[in-house]
Image (cartoon, rainbow over all chains, first blue to last red):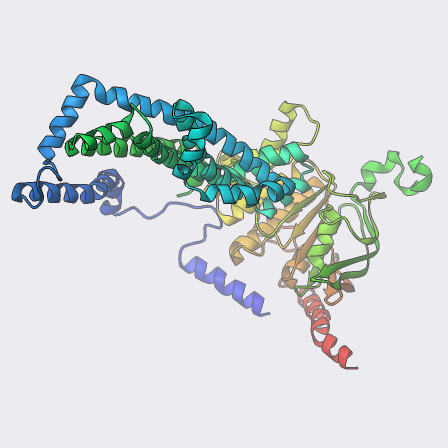
Length: 293
Length: 287
């Protein structure tokens, strides 16, 4: 009885609100002008917001060098850094070192990312693999990439092999962990739909498990790439005769901190560009998630 | 061979006998953290082909478990579940279920979601495309084939789920509180729609709900269940109730007239039957 009254009340209030549209969404109200303008301004606003802090930092740096808060040997002026950057770019050194670093990261990330993906899928799907591999994996993952350098140096020397392995290890851990998590977190409700529709193992894997895991896998891939880039610079600082990390070491040894800061800027920008590119790919792959918003 | 065992369901009569469900002595026990628990006890129920049976009961009476057993998601049980004379063993495309949540795959469009219902059927690709289109139109969403679930309202998503359940032309459609999460207006609209669709397909349907009105509006019979252990308390025939003039759906509404005095009397009867299940277990335990 109360049920009936409730439903009648809901019905009436829905009608009074002019909301008798059942379940089909219909745009009725004209949008205010502010709402119409906002989408056009939003990207510009985003850029302004994102740049506010870096610009403030840059202003502080400029101010500090004008007022001589720190000696120029320790904190070079923005003009010095810009000139050094221009020099490095003009002589081709910058491109040479950046391309070496990028190549290393691409190779190492391809190796570690693929291995991490396969390991993550195996651990996500098979309880037995998880039981046998996960404890060791977790323990090894706790050792930071740099901690591996002494042992790996003895095993593979200090050449490209060392750098590749360190970068691969740095990429592998987040990719494997997030892939595993994504696969294990596939909702049972969706698995049941597959069972009811008589899906076999292959259909369950390709139609349900892997698509459902994509967001988590991608989180892992982005973390993996970031950590690969960090590991690269670290390993180049220690054992290298080229690359952006080497550029920093060299600058420090010559006490040319303008060169160190120039290299830092490039490292940051390249890292940012890599992550931004991946986030674009991610949005493309997950357009179904954005479709509703 | 099968003729001698099940003479009634002779292959020649199969078309007429499609969707006959027979449940005998069905008992389902779980272990909940070590202690045995009887979810369903000695359930017996015959559902005729094309019949619409509603099951009402308080939560915990095992009504959802019953549907999970019929659809094959739960395989361990005592007793018999026969669909057209054949015992049910695991899921199959001859049975379909619509859950309370639509459970659409968010990364697939409406038509791709419906097409999943045909993934394991052996139609040529062109037939599959046609069936998907037809069933989206059947639920009134022909224009939304390319929409993602995040772009659809709750009611629309549930329609897609119904299309996905029906696309492989199952013999029996199971509905587990399919409109429970929808607002009142959408719910009554979809109830009428569901009846139209089920009648159009000539399919047997079992609906589980806790809404007595919904059960009586849709069902030819209403099965009342009591909890602890889940069992059938009574079966109330509703097939003779007068039909509503306006079901809310385009075309004639097939549902029973909610305002008719006979409907209201039956509703009181069902509520009384349900209430008996609520009031008595403590008293019985005390006795």
